[in-house]
Image (cartoon, rainbow, N blue to C red; front, side):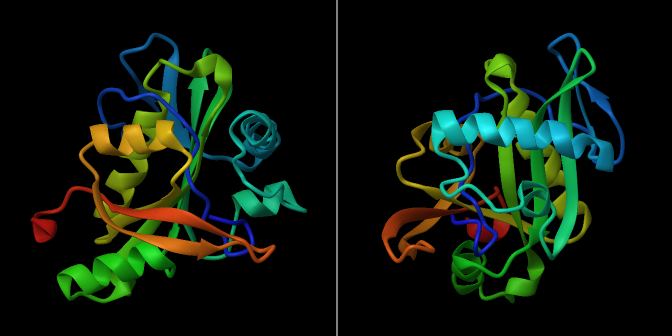
Length: 201
């Protein structure tokens, strides 16, 4: 989704393995890969990653005027980076959810949107693909939402087939698909997903 609203569709990443710890650095099955909370000093590297994904995957769809601010939006609940041999190669954020995915979950289970959190700003550098980095970032943010008593949701554009494959393989449930209006007035099809939850069954 567009950066104007602050909820972006996720970039293409590979499926993977275990959930990383929310509170600290986690070494994964892939040697040299770890997930840890984002620090201010990581922002420059994260901007470089989204510049790459913008060029190669059209994510974010519209390049933000202030990329560092885009990575740190209002309502931020947490942010994490993936490191490979000490180099930042991926990013994910968790934020207060007010957009279509939150509304879809609330309508489906009869609970308030305030019980949700949206996973966003998920991106992985090309050099780190096929190392389960995207899946581990997704799982880390999902676990953080759960620890905060929130249901994790997200939105993804129809053309992002790699991200859709990631969410499907991770057991996320597609709740609905909506026409999403972009900042320039055009519309794109967006799929609304929720993390696995007994309330959804």
